[in-house]
Length: 312
Image (tube, rainbow, N blue to C red; front, side):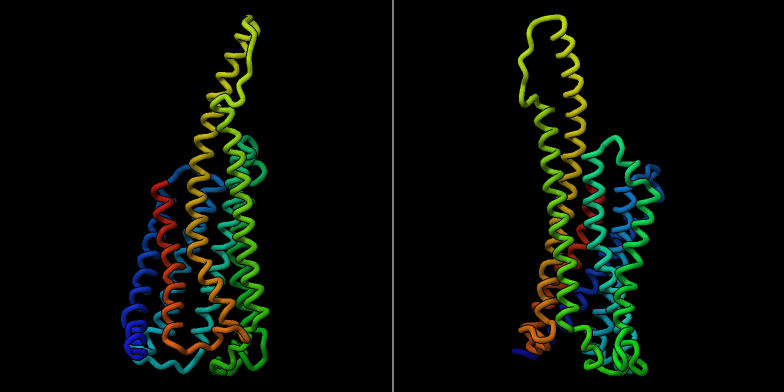
């Protein structure tokens, strides 16, 4: 039974995940291509396109990692004489994933500014500042991973031809390293959730104004008629703000929901497979099923994001 399950994981599940990752790549690349046909530019739109680029590269890294480390060796009999490419794939995979996490939080902040400060949000976060932020979000995570993988004498990239084998990757399974990564991810999740909850309150207050809650009694006079007319004008403007804010909140909530769906299983598995944790160095076939589910959730997240962009 174990052999059958292993066969299913490597010969069916692995290529299925690779295919899904390639589909995610194509979908996100389509969203990126649409940027050349969109004339308007805004901070939120630029950050959204940048997130699509992140998902594209993350999907490519996921597909390459699955093929090189799982499907190739087990199904095709490929033999690797060096661990350098595998480690490089992991550096980029983790770097791109962290970049995506930071993009989600940054996008939440931009959505908040757009609704909370509708008249001067472009001044607070200009396109130039947004592009600088995007560059930082792109460079720092991957560069940090590369430095970390290069920081241990006789291991990682410092091993001769990277051939220290699995034992030369001990730093990757270090509990403190994995705890730090998990804390960063959870912190970004919580921060994003707080921002959207705050944004929801703002949109709700706009809705109450738009429907006239609370209503004020006006005395019948010329002055009150002017006040009433101005009130109607205000209500119309508030209704437009509410519609825009409601659409933003719904879209952002869906994106955040896919973020939680994709990252929660992977984050839990990442910390549980650290050195000294219950699933460290697990060899049972059922662990392959757990790994398959966590990878499936992450890839489905990158597939749903471009669909959300296109429909919303």
